[in-house]
Length: 388
Image (cartoon, rainbow, N blue to C red; front, side, top):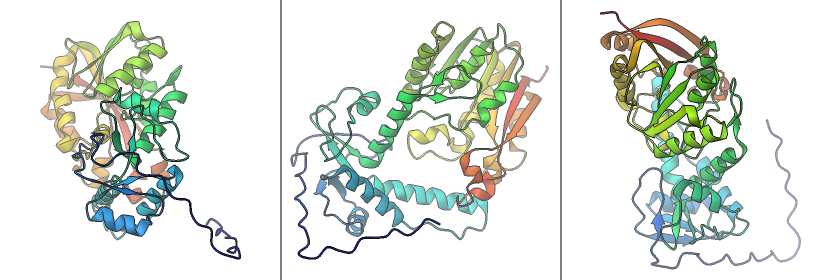
């Protein structure tokens, strides 16, 4: 346990007077562009607050539906978010993994709804005028492009996520088996969980193979296959930000001539020798745009991928499906469901390779879903059409 913090005794004499917080940087009634990843409607009214606002008062006000426009000190604003998060109740009496999952999703949604009501405004140059605030302009331009109006209003929690993503994008990320770095964009699945990537290292040489990568994200699977001998990859993703991210990464890695990517629902046109897909693995509705990399309502994307796979394969072609069994462990899918889908879609498993989860949450005993995550495995299925 961490050592308790020692506080110095209060100084003698009159208490110092806190300096007045700056006035709200957004003039009353001024039009603004509202930015929310959850497609929440623009606030009808913003209530100006500053460093004098306590976390208890803030919690009462946001629970009453207020959007609080923060002015004052940037670090105080971050501390307020942390204090609000600690005041939110989290159920801990779940009896089954499914109950724990449902409780955790409710808690996450409540946290999002609460913290997203602490908002800040940016000016025409995407400057955040809180004292001690970092330069956020580059992160904002990377995600939104040029400002549309004189002022932009965004939840502070979202802006902090954008700043973190901008740092990942600047530094890049090393991936096992890949020569060069991946530079992820905000809103695109960050490949820090490498179990599914390392499974592809078991593949034999791919010399001369034409590949489709469905749901490419950062493009990491495409680039790994190209570096292992594939002649070309046509990749797709339903999110324009992922398409831009994959295209930029291909340029950085010197793979632009053999890599094409476009915005599409599922498959590119034509046929391929190898079709790879790492779909969302939790069959629940996504709560926001970022969620779509993990949550697939009623397994719709997975089912449509399996249904369309035989037609996308050239003669003798193979499909590679990478999927976690966490949904089964949580009780969201019955045992045997995936094999039933293979049979329904006229597919057979030529071979498979599994690996135990090694990501941080699988080892975190304080995680509400540890009971399931500690037993999670990810499997690479090699699928071929059943012979007629």
